[in-house]
Image 1: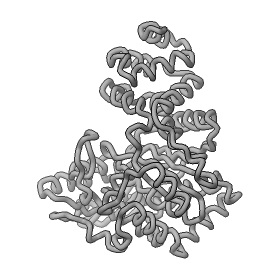
Image 2 (image 1 turned 180 degrees about the horizontal axis):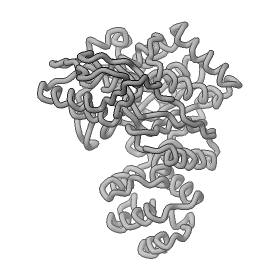
Image 3 (image 1 turned 180 degrees about the vertical axis):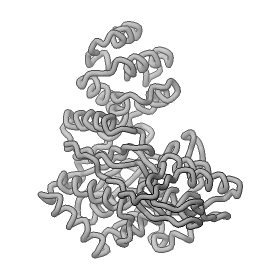
Image 4 (image 1 turned 90 degrees about the vertical axis):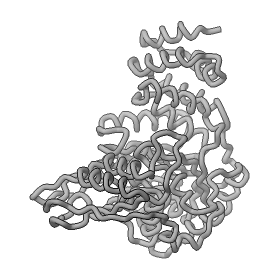
Length: 435
Protein backbone atom coordinates (compact mmCIF):
# COMPACT_ATOMS: atom_id res chain seq x y z
CA UNK A 1 0.00 0.00 0.00
CA UNK A 2 1.31 3.45 -0.93
CA UNK A 3 0.91 6.77 0.86
CA UNK A 4 0.18 9.82 -1.29
CA UNK A 5 2.39 11.88 1.05
CA UNK A 6 5.40 9.72 0.18
CA UNK A 7 4.73 9.90 -3.57
CA UNK A 8 4.41 13.70 -3.46
CA UNK A 9 7.70 13.84 -1.57
CA UNK A 10 9.34 11.51 -4.10
CA UNK A 11 8.28 13.62 -7.07
CA UNK A 12 9.23 16.82 -5.22
CA UNK A 13 12.75 15.36 -4.93
CA UNK A 14 12.78 14.62 -8.70
CA UNK A 15 12.84 10.85 -8.20
CA UNK A 16 11.30 8.61 -10.86
CA UNK A 17 7.96 7.05 -9.95
CA UNK A 18 7.36 3.36 -10.62
CA UNK A 19 4.49 2.01 -12.72
CA UNK A 20 2.54 0.74 -9.72
CA UNK A 21 2.92 4.12 -7.98
CA UNK A 22 1.54 6.02 -10.97
CA UNK A 23 -1.28 3.48 -11.27
CA UNK A 24 -2.12 4.05 -7.59
CA UNK A 25 -2.25 7.84 -8.06
CA UNK A 26 -4.44 7.76 -11.19
CA UNK A 27 -6.88 5.09 -10.00
CA UNK A 28 -7.06 6.47 -6.46
CA UNK A 29 -7.86 10.00 -7.63
CA UNK A 30 -10.38 8.79 -10.22
CA UNK A 31 -12.24 6.80 -7.55
CA UNK A 32 -12.15 9.71 -5.08
CA UNK A 33 -9.83 7.96 -2.61
CA UNK A 34 -7.07 10.53 -3.14
CA UNK A 35 -8.28 13.99 -2.13
CA UNK A 36 -8.09 17.12 -4.28
CA UNK A 37 -5.54 18.85 -2.05
CA UNK A 38 -3.21 15.84 -2.25
CA UNK A 39 -3.52 15.58 -6.03
CA UNK A 40 -3.01 19.34 -6.33
CA UNK A 41 0.28 19.03 -4.45
CA UNK A 42 1.36 16.19 -6.71
CA UNK A 43 0.48 18.13 -9.89
CA UNK A 44 2.39 21.16 -8.62
CA UNK A 45 5.41 18.91 -7.96
CA UNK A 46 5.17 17.66 -11.56
CA UNK A 47 4.79 21.23 -12.81
CA UNK A 48 8.08 22.28 -11.17
CA UNK A 49 10.07 19.04 -11.36
CA UNK A 50 8.81 17.51 -14.60
CA UNK A 51 8.58 13.84 -15.47
CA UNK A 52 10.88 11.41 -17.25
CA UNK A 53 9.90 10.03 -20.65
CA UNK A 54 8.98 6.72 -19.00
CA UNK A 55 6.85 8.40 -16.31
CA UNK A 56 4.99 10.47 -18.91
CA UNK A 57 4.19 7.37 -20.96
CA UNK A 58 3.02 5.45 -17.88
CA UNK A 59 0.83 8.38 -16.75
CA UNK A 60 -0.73 8.46 -20.21
CA UNK A 61 -1.36 4.71 -20.21
CA UNK A 62 -2.96 4.70 -16.76
CA UNK A 63 -5.20 7.64 -17.68
CA UNK A 64 -6.22 5.84 -20.88
CA UNK A 65 -6.98 2.67 -18.92
CA UNK A 66 -9.15 4.59 -16.42
CA UNK A 67 -12.18 4.26 -18.72
CA UNK A 68 -13.42 2.89 -22.03
CA UNK A 69 -10.99 2.07 -24.82
CA UNK A 70 -12.55 1.91 -28.28
CA UNK A 71 -11.90 -1.30 -30.18
CA UNK A 72 -11.71 -0.40 -33.86
CA UNK A 73 -10.43 -3.80 -34.98
CA UNK A 74 -13.77 -4.36 -36.71
CA UNK A 75 -12.88 -1.59 -39.20
CA UNK A 76 -10.78 -2.71 -42.15
CA UNK A 77 -7.72 -0.74 -43.19
CA UNK A 78 -5.37 1.58 -41.32
CA UNK A 79 -7.53 3.91 -39.22
CA UNK A 80 -6.16 7.46 -39.03
CA UNK A 81 -7.01 10.29 -36.66
CA UNK A 82 -6.00 13.94 -36.44
CA UNK A 83 -5.73 16.12 -33.36
CA UNK A 84 -5.20 19.88 -33.16
CA UNK A 85 -3.91 21.55 -30.01
CA UNK A 86 -6.40 24.34 -30.71
CA UNK A 87 -6.37 27.65 -32.49
CA UNK A 88 -8.49 30.46 -33.88
CA UNK A 89 -10.45 29.68 -37.05
CA UNK A 90 -9.29 26.05 -37.04
CA UNK A 91 -11.94 24.21 -39.04
CA UNK A 92 -9.42 21.76 -40.53
CA UNK A 93 -11.23 18.53 -39.60
CA UNK A 94 -14.34 19.62 -41.52
CA UNK A 95 -12.33 19.68 -44.76
CA UNK A 96 -9.63 17.12 -44.10
CA UNK A 97 -11.81 14.23 -42.86
CA UNK A 98 -14.04 14.04 -45.97
CA UNK A 99 -11.02 14.46 -48.28
CA UNK A 100 -9.22 11.54 -46.63
CA UNK A 101 -12.38 9.42 -46.42
CA UNK A 102 -13.22 9.98 -50.10
CA UNK A 103 -9.87 8.35 -50.92
CA UNK A 104 -10.95 5.19 -49.10
CA UNK A 105 -8.94 5.77 -45.92
CA UNK A 106 -11.05 5.22 -42.76
CA UNK A 107 -11.28 8.30 -40.53
CA UNK A 108 -12.51 7.42 -37.02
CA UNK A 109 -12.33 10.64 -35.04
CA UNK A 110 -13.27 11.64 -31.52
CA UNK A 111 -13.45 15.44 -31.22
CA UNK A 112 -14.01 17.95 -28.47
CA UNK A 113 -15.84 21.18 -27.78
CA UNK A 114 -14.28 24.62 -27.73
CA UNK A 115 -13.14 26.35 -24.57
CA UNK A 116 -11.98 29.95 -24.33
CA UNK A 117 -10.96 31.61 -27.59
CA UNK A 118 -10.38 28.33 -29.45
CA UNK A 119 -13.24 26.58 -31.25
CA UNK A 120 -14.22 22.90 -31.12
CA UNK A 121 -15.17 20.65 -34.03
CA UNK A 122 -18.23 19.27 -32.22
CA UNK A 123 -19.64 22.79 -31.73
CA UNK A 124 -19.18 23.55 -35.42
CA UNK A 125 -20.95 20.35 -36.51
CA UNK A 126 -23.92 21.25 -34.32
CA UNK A 127 -24.54 24.14 -36.71
CA UNK A 128 -26.42 21.46 -38.69
CA UNK A 129 -29.87 20.98 -37.06
CA UNK A 130 -30.30 17.38 -35.97
CA UNK A 131 -26.62 16.46 -36.29
CA UNK A 132 -25.78 13.74 -33.76
CA UNK A 133 -22.43 14.30 -32.07
CA UNK A 134 -22.99 11.36 -29.74
CA UNK A 135 -22.96 7.98 -31.47
CA UNK A 136 -23.24 4.46 -30.03
CA UNK A 137 -19.99 2.57 -30.59
CA UNK A 138 -21.68 0.14 -33.01
CA UNK A 139 -23.01 3.03 -35.15
CA UNK A 140 -19.63 4.79 -35.04
CA UNK A 141 -17.86 1.65 -36.32
CA UNK A 142 -20.60 0.91 -38.87
CA UNK A 143 -20.35 4.42 -40.35
CA UNK A 144 -16.58 4.16 -40.73
CA UNK A 145 -16.85 0.72 -42.36
CA UNK A 146 -19.55 1.79 -44.78
CA UNK A 147 -18.73 5.45 -45.45
CA UNK A 148 -15.11 5.68 -44.21
CA UNK A 149 -15.95 8.56 -41.86
CA UNK A 150 -17.34 9.22 -38.39
CA UNK A 151 -16.73 12.18 -36.10
CA UNK A 152 -18.23 12.13 -32.63
CA UNK A 153 -17.83 13.76 -29.24
CA UNK A 154 -15.79 12.00 -26.61
CA UNK A 155 -17.85 9.66 -24.44
CA UNK A 156 -18.17 10.48 -20.75
CA UNK A 157 -16.17 7.40 -19.88
CA UNK A 158 -13.28 8.02 -22.29
CA UNK A 159 -10.23 8.68 -20.09
CA UNK A 160 -12.27 9.90 -17.07
CA UNK A 161 -9.05 10.33 -15.09
CA UNK A 162 -8.01 13.03 -17.53
CA UNK A 163 -11.26 14.94 -17.05
CA UNK A 164 -10.79 15.01 -13.27
CA UNK A 165 -7.08 15.80 -13.45
CA UNK A 166 -7.54 18.55 -16.05
CA UNK A 167 -10.23 20.27 -13.96
CA UNK A 168 -7.83 20.33 -11.02
CA UNK A 169 -4.92 21.54 -13.17
CA UNK A 170 -7.11 24.35 -14.45
CA UNK A 171 -8.09 25.39 -10.92
CA UNK A 172 -4.54 25.27 -9.53
CA UNK A 173 -2.52 26.96 -12.33
CA UNK A 174 -0.90 23.69 -13.43
CA UNK A 175 -2.14 23.59 -17.01
CA UNK A 176 1.09 24.71 -18.67
CA UNK A 177 3.21 21.60 -18.05
CA UNK A 178 4.51 19.59 -21.02
CA UNK A 179 4.17 16.12 -19.38
CA UNK A 180 0.65 16.95 -18.17
CA UNK A 181 -0.46 18.44 -21.50
CA UNK A 182 1.00 15.53 -23.49
CA UNK A 183 -0.49 12.84 -21.26
CA UNK A 184 -3.88 14.59 -21.30
CA UNK A 185 -4.05 14.74 -25.10
CA UNK A 186 -2.55 11.33 -25.78
CA UNK A 187 -4.60 9.44 -23.18
CA UNK A 188 -7.75 10.41 -25.10
CA UNK A 189 -6.17 9.74 -28.50
CA UNK A 190 -4.92 6.30 -27.48
CA UNK A 191 -8.32 5.46 -25.98
CA UNK A 192 -9.96 6.43 -29.28
CA UNK A 193 -8.38 3.41 -30.95
CA UNK A 194 -6.93 4.73 -34.24
CA UNK A 195 -3.84 3.09 -35.76
CA UNK A 196 -2.21 6.36 -36.77
CA UNK A 197 -2.38 9.83 -35.24
CA UNK A 198 -1.45 13.07 -36.98
CA UNK A 199 -0.90 15.90 -34.49
CA UNK A 200 -1.42 19.51 -35.58
CA UNK A 201 0.57 21.42 -32.97
CA UNK A 202 -0.27 25.12 -33.20
CA UNK A 203 2.42 27.74 -32.54
CA UNK A 204 2.01 31.48 -32.04
CA UNK A 205 -0.07 34.25 -30.51
CA UNK A 206 -3.39 32.42 -30.90
CA UNK A 207 -2.08 29.05 -29.71
CA UNK A 208 -1.43 27.51 -26.33
CA UNK A 209 2.23 27.09 -27.28
CA UNK A 210 3.60 30.56 -28.01
CA UNK A 211 7.13 29.58 -29.08
CA UNK A 212 8.44 27.01 -31.55
CA UNK A 213 10.77 25.57 -28.88
CA UNK A 214 7.85 24.81 -26.52
CA UNK A 215 5.75 23.45 -29.37
CA UNK A 216 8.61 21.22 -30.53
CA UNK A 217 9.07 19.80 -27.04
CA UNK A 218 5.34 19.09 -26.73
CA UNK A 219 5.21 17.51 -30.20
CA UNK A 220 8.22 15.26 -29.54
CA UNK A 221 6.78 14.20 -26.18
CA UNK A 222 3.44 13.22 -27.76
CA UNK A 223 5.09 11.44 -30.69
CA UNK A 224 7.26 9.45 -28.24
CA UNK A 225 4.17 8.46 -26.21
CA UNK A 226 2.35 7.28 -29.34
CA UNK A 227 5.33 5.33 -30.61
CA UNK A 228 5.74 3.63 -27.24
CA UNK A 229 2.08 2.57 -27.59
CA UNK A 230 2.80 1.10 -31.08
CA UNK A 231 0.93 3.83 -32.97
CA UNK A 232 1.99 5.44 -36.23
CA UNK A 233 2.79 9.05 -35.30
CA UNK A 234 3.60 12.37 -36.91
CA UNK A 235 3.39 15.94 -35.61
CA UNK A 236 3.11 19.00 -37.85
CA UNK A 237 3.87 22.39 -36.28
CA UNK A 238 1.64 25.02 -37.90
CA UNK A 239 1.48 28.79 -37.57
CA UNK A 240 -1.18 30.41 -35.37
CA UNK A 241 0.16 33.97 -35.32
CA UNK A 242 -2.98 34.98 -37.21
CA UNK A 243 -6.37 33.24 -37.47
CA UNK A 244 -6.44 30.25 -39.81
CA UNK A 245 -8.42 31.16 -42.90
CA UNK A 246 -10.86 34.07 -42.76
CA UNK A 247 -13.84 32.81 -40.73
CA UNK A 248 -13.93 32.72 -36.92
CA UNK A 249 -17.17 31.48 -35.37
CA UNK A 250 -18.99 28.15 -35.60
CA UNK A 251 -21.45 28.41 -38.49
CA UNK A 252 -19.21 30.89 -40.31
CA UNK A 253 -16.35 28.38 -40.14
CA UNK A 254 -18.58 25.60 -41.49
CA UNK A 255 -19.47 27.89 -44.41
CA UNK A 256 -15.77 28.48 -45.11
CA UNK A 257 -15.06 24.74 -44.87
CA UNK A 258 -17.77 24.05 -47.47
CA UNK A 259 -16.33 26.77 -49.72
CA UNK A 260 -12.95 25.08 -49.33
CA UNK A 261 -14.40 21.72 -50.38
CA UNK A 262 -15.69 23.52 -53.49
CA UNK A 263 -12.17 24.69 -54.29
CA UNK A 264 -12.41 28.20 -52.85
CA UNK A 265 -10.45 27.73 -49.63
CA UNK A 266 -8.16 30.47 -48.26
CA UNK A 267 -4.54 29.85 -49.24
CA UNK A 268 -3.15 29.68 -45.69
CA UNK A 269 -5.90 27.29 -44.58
CA UNK A 270 -5.48 24.93 -47.54
CA UNK A 271 -1.71 24.87 -47.03
CA UNK A 272 -2.32 23.41 -43.56
CA UNK A 273 -4.98 21.00 -44.87
CA UNK A 274 -2.65 19.62 -47.54
CA UNK A 275 0.29 19.36 -45.12
CA UNK A 276 -1.73 17.34 -42.59
CA UNK A 277 -3.57 15.34 -45.24
CA UNK A 278 -0.40 14.26 -47.02
CA UNK A 279 1.05 12.95 -43.75
CA UNK A 280 -2.19 11.05 -43.03
CA UNK A 281 -2.22 9.42 -46.48
CA UNK A 282 1.40 8.33 -46.14
CA UNK A 283 0.60 7.01 -42.66
CA UNK A 284 -2.28 5.03 -44.16
CA UNK A 285 0.17 3.62 -46.75
CA UNK A 286 -1.89 4.64 -49.78
CA UNK A 287 0.93 6.69 -51.28
CA UNK A 288 4.70 6.95 -51.05
CA UNK A 289 5.44 10.65 -51.28
CA UNK A 290 4.10 14.04 -50.27
CA UNK A 291 3.82 15.05 -53.93
CA UNK A 292 1.67 12.02 -54.74
CA UNK A 293 -0.46 12.64 -51.64
CA UNK A 294 -1.13 16.28 -52.53
CA UNK A 295 -2.14 15.25 -56.05
CA UNK A 296 -4.59 12.72 -54.61
CA UNK A 297 -6.01 15.24 -52.13
CA UNK A 298 -6.40 17.89 -54.84
CA UNK A 299 -8.35 15.44 -56.98
CA UNK A 300 -10.99 15.05 -54.24
CA UNK A 301 -11.69 18.77 -54.52
CA UNK A 302 -11.66 18.99 -58.31
CA UNK A 303 -13.87 15.93 -58.87
CA UNK A 304 -16.31 16.87 -56.09
CA UNK A 305 -15.87 13.61 -54.17
CA UNK A 306 -14.80 15.30 -50.92
CA UNK A 307 -17.86 17.59 -50.93
CA UNK A 308 -20.14 14.64 -51.66
CA UNK A 309 -18.54 12.68 -48.80
CA UNK A 310 -19.12 15.65 -46.49
CA UNK A 311 -22.82 15.80 -47.46
CA UNK A 312 -23.17 12.07 -46.84
CA UNK A 313 -21.36 12.42 -43.51
CA UNK A 314 -23.79 15.15 -42.39
CA UNK A 315 -26.75 13.00 -43.46
CA UNK A 316 -25.69 9.74 -41.79
CA UNK A 317 -25.17 11.57 -38.49
CA UNK A 318 -28.67 13.05 -38.48
CA UNK A 319 -28.31 16.33 -40.38
CA UNK A 320 -29.88 17.41 -43.67
CA UNK A 321 -27.51 17.18 -46.64
CA UNK A 322 -29.43 20.03 -48.31
CA UNK A 323 -28.22 22.38 -45.56
CA UNK A 324 -24.69 22.03 -46.91
CA UNK A 325 -25.72 24.03 -49.97
CA UNK A 326 -27.66 26.61 -47.95
CA UNK A 327 -25.63 27.25 -44.80
CA UNK A 328 -26.29 30.99 -44.96
CA UNK A 329 -29.96 30.21 -44.18
CA UNK A 330 -28.85 28.77 -40.81
CA UNK A 331 -27.24 32.03 -39.71
CA UNK A 332 -29.44 33.69 -37.08
CA UNK A 333 -28.08 37.18 -36.42
CA UNK A 334 -29.65 40.58 -35.83
CA UNK A 335 -26.60 42.78 -36.35
CA UNK A 336 -23.91 42.73 -39.03
CA UNK A 337 -21.32 45.49 -39.22
CA UNK A 338 -18.07 46.25 -41.06
CA UNK A 339 -14.77 47.00 -39.35
CA UNK A 340 -13.31 49.99 -41.16
CA UNK A 341 -9.55 50.57 -41.23
CA UNK A 342 -8.45 53.93 -39.82
CA UNK A 343 -5.13 53.82 -41.66
CA UNK A 344 -3.55 52.54 -44.84
CA UNK A 345 -0.64 50.18 -45.36
CA UNK A 346 0.20 46.51 -45.48
CA UNK A 347 -1.10 44.14 -42.79
CA UNK A 348 1.98 43.06 -40.83
CA UNK A 349 0.23 41.05 -38.10
CA UNK A 350 -3.19 40.04 -36.81
CA UNK A 351 -3.33 39.09 -33.12
CA UNK A 352 -5.12 35.75 -33.38
CA UNK A 353 -6.08 35.52 -29.73
CA UNK A 354 -7.67 38.98 -29.90
CA UNK A 355 -9.83 37.89 -32.84
CA UNK A 356 -10.79 34.73 -30.96
CA UNK A 357 -11.69 36.80 -27.92
CA UNK A 358 -13.87 39.06 -30.07
CA UNK A 359 -15.82 36.03 -31.30
CA UNK A 360 -16.07 34.71 -27.74
CA UNK A 361 -17.35 38.09 -26.53
CA UNK A 362 -20.11 37.96 -29.15
CA UNK A 363 -21.19 34.60 -27.71
CA UNK A 364 -19.27 32.27 -30.02
CA UNK A 365 -17.07 30.73 -27.31
CA UNK A 366 -17.22 29.59 -23.70
CA UNK A 367 -15.47 30.81 -20.60
CA UNK A 368 -16.41 27.54 -18.85
CA UNK A 369 -17.52 24.13 -20.11
CA UNK A 370 -21.08 24.77 -18.95
CA UNK A 371 -21.59 27.92 -21.05
CA UNK A 372 -24.06 27.92 -23.95
CA UNK A 373 -22.72 29.35 -27.21
CA UNK A 374 -24.35 31.23 -30.07
CA UNK A 375 -23.47 29.23 -33.20
CA UNK A 376 -24.21 32.11 -35.62
CA UNK A 377 -21.96 34.89 -34.32
CA UNK A 378 -18.36 35.55 -35.24
CA UNK A 379 -15.94 37.44 -37.46
CA UNK A 380 -15.05 37.26 -41.15
CA UNK A 381 -11.64 38.72 -41.97
CA UNK A 382 -11.29 40.40 -45.36
CA UNK A 383 -7.60 41.21 -45.01
CA UNK A 384 -4.78 38.86 -43.95
CA UNK A 385 -1.06 39.35 -43.29
CA UNK A 386 0.63 40.73 -46.41
CA UNK A 387 -2.53 42.33 -47.85
CA UNK A 388 -2.69 46.00 -48.85
CA UNK A 389 -5.32 48.07 -47.05
CA UNK A 390 -6.64 51.53 -47.91
CA UNK A 391 -7.90 53.96 -45.28
CA UNK A 392 -11.67 53.54 -44.72
CA UNK A 393 -11.58 50.09 -46.36
CA UNK A 394 -13.38 47.18 -44.66
CA UNK A 395 -10.94 44.75 -43.03
CA UNK A 396 -13.55 42.50 -41.39
CA UNK A 397 -17.27 41.94 -40.84
CA UNK A 398 -18.77 41.30 -37.40
CA UNK A 399 -21.80 39.00 -37.06
CA UNK A 400 -23.67 39.37 -33.76
CA UNK A 401 -26.93 39.49 -31.84
CA UNK A 402 -26.18 42.49 -29.62
CA UNK A 403 -25.38 45.92 -30.99
CA UNK A 404 -23.40 46.83 -27.88
CA UNK A 405 -21.27 43.68 -28.10
CA UNK A 406 -20.75 44.19 -31.83
CA UNK A 407 -19.36 47.67 -31.15
CA UNK A 408 -16.92 46.26 -28.56
CA UNK A 409 -15.94 43.49 -30.99
CA UNK A 410 -15.25 46.06 -33.72
CA UNK A 411 -12.70 47.75 -31.48
CA UNK A 412 -11.09 44.43 -30.53
CA UNK A 413 -10.75 43.37 -34.16
CA UNK A 414 -9.41 46.76 -35.25
CA UNK A 415 -6.86 46.71 -32.40
CA UNK A 416 -5.75 43.20 -33.44
CA UNK A 417 -4.44 44.54 -36.76
CA UNK A 418 -0.97 46.07 -37.16
CA UNK A 419 0.07 47.87 -40.36
CA UNK A 420 3.38 48.78 -41.99
CA UNK A 421 4.18 51.00 -44.94
CA UNK A 422 6.45 48.35 -46.44
CA UNK A 423 4.99 45.20 -48.03
CA UNK A 424 4.90 42.25 -45.63
CA UNK A 425 5.22 38.62 -46.69
CA UNK A 426 2.39 36.22 -45.74
CA UNK A 427 3.08 33.94 -42.78
CA UNK A 428 4.78 30.60 -43.39
CA UNK A 429 2.15 28.10 -42.27
CA UNK A 430 4.04 24.80 -41.88
CA UNK A 431 6.95 25.35 -39.51
CA UNK A 432 8.26 21.86 -38.76
CA UNK A 433 7.41 18.16 -39.15
CA UNK A 434 8.35 15.72 -36.40
CA UNK A 435 8.24 11.96 -36.96
